[in-house]
Amino acid sequence: MTAGIRTTTDNMKNIRTVVLIPVALAVLMGCGSAGCAAKGPSDSTGFEWEGVRLSEKMLSSEIRRNPDASWIDGQEGNLKWNYTTGLELLSFLDVYDAYGGDSILNYVSSWYDGIISDDGTIYSYKLSNYVLDHICPGEALLKLGVCSSPKYALAAATLRRQLSEQPRIPDGGFWHKKAYPNQMWLDGIYMAEPFYADYAVRFESGTRRDSSLNDVADQFVLIARHTCDDSTGLYRHAYDDSRKMFWCDPVTGRSKHAWGRAMGWYAMAMADVLEIMPEDFPRREEIVSLLKGIVSKLPAYADPETGMWYQVMDCPGKEGNYVEATCSAMFCYAMLKGIRIRVLEKSLMPYAEKCYRQLCSTFLESNADGTLTLKKCCAVAGLGGKENRSGDYDYYINCKVIDNDPKGIGPFIMASLEYEKIK
Image (cartoon, rainbow, N blue to C red; front, side, top):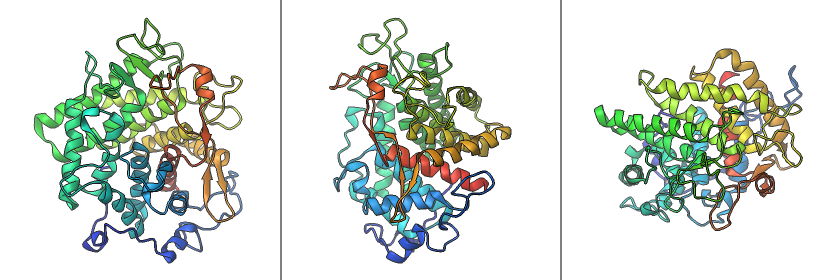
């Protein structure tokens, strides 16, 4: 993610306006371009999408569904500083970085330009709520290029200030949000750490930079210590340091289950931070070891028929459990990227490639209008809150399931790009 976005005066000239040029969109949708060739016969592996840039094809499908980014995640044109929009737009910028396309850059820039005022104020964001989810859109903001706009730089600095002030449990782990005191969630590691590491590498130096990167490493290590279930090697969704929440074990403080997407967030965060963190940083290997540990457990908990992973990771095959798209895309992405950046063994590549092809075969559907649908995405799952979410097995398997959730679309696009880089 440290690779710079292509920025030119011409690219940024009309940054406030989303320009969806029909010809450019038609090319992305797949009419003769090398990148989006029509789906052809299966290759020798049986992969029906061989030769198709599914990253571009899924991106263009999302733009068809959401002509403006303010419609992503059912926002229906309402601006909201939301991690789901930030995640999907980050994947769009990755596609832009790989293949270009000014309409993509304009699409992303228009959302950020509309939600950030000239003085750097972020619409609908409140620092004092200390929500780690609200750090997540900052990573795409950094990738977009804070140097291209003073207000982007001010907004990014505000997000960095939130991390400096974020409440912590006694050993230094970030609270997930002010409304959830004393709680660390695996989700929060992805929400905060890639931005935190990227900001430190880009804008900090000397002891300040090292202090920030050490803090990033601490968050990975602490959440592992608090959530890892030694009997399975999997990680429970969350931890309550106070042991007071009804959803936690009164002895360990852990929630009841290893939720697939929570572990997916954690794995993606490691892959992204390891790409950002300097290779000679002393504590980098601690994160490498954690990623290797998760990857080593994945085959044992995969569905034997599809090779994909379950909504409730630690209950494979249990009645009512189902293979779920968002966590499966996240694991594929983390593996493929981990191999590319040389923190996972190259010998893992055949398995990782097979998993990506199975991801597409299991969850991807081609529509009559040329768009793609990603099926079987868990819409949302959490713990506590006003809904008194219990985190038990029945809770997770009864969460709403939808198509094309941005928490699946973003990782699918990212995994597709990683796959395309090796083909």
